[in-house]
Image 1 (tube, each protein chain N blue to C red):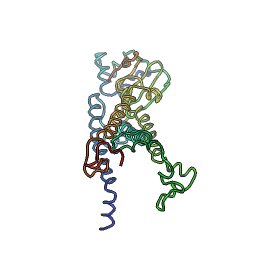
Image 2 (image 1 turned 180 degrees about the horizontal axis):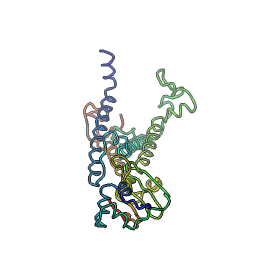
Image 3 (image 1 turned 90 degrees about the vertical axis):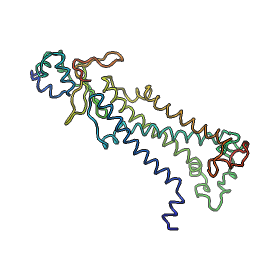
Image 4 (image 1 turned 135 degrees about the horizontal axis):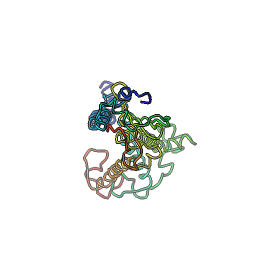
Length: 225
Length: 94
């Protein structure tokens, strides 16, 4: 097998989702452009071209509001699965294993194995950061994309306000506004529903061959991997 | 307009705003705009741009602008707040 084919085989999951993410983002840019220009025409205003639209706050807020909710979903799911159990779900740790677990169970420090990452072996801040790196990165991306949603959202909102001959608002006024929280909460509700559904449905339903499912023959009571 | 040149003022308006002037005054834009109760002689106290829309406060009233073919054009002028409703404008091209 050539090294390219091996790379594709070994990274298929990431490559597949990267490809469909890009396709959907490009699709969104065209749909968003058409929708924006429909509104412009209806208001007697000038239409915009593709590049002006994809560099506009209107496009950016629609992207950022979805990204922040995805990363919040992962952030909450990762932290919740440390402390909370769902009996029967492969998404959950077995009962009795709530919490951050012992060093021995987590293969850190003197319990690390020969092929453990070096950051799992060393003591101190480096190990603490590495031990929480998933939450840290998810949390940082969530905060940054939520800030991006608010910054681009206030510009897009104010453009609409001015189109309607209404007064613009400040950033502070926008982050407590109905528009901001409507966009935010409609994204959050679907994210939380998705992970909750997955945790619950995977108790009783199976998908043969998927890493996200229990084995077809596993009992419903089996919890965790 | 302070110098009495209605044609120059009309050149700053978008098409809908010009039509608004003509409908209100029954005259051409250049003539009609002189008859409107429009005081733009004050100081610009604020100007804000949001993507392709702008809001400029001049004296006691405000202007709403949009991006035109070559430059910014005025959609509405002589606008004053009206509670939570849209501004009340002397020239309304919306």
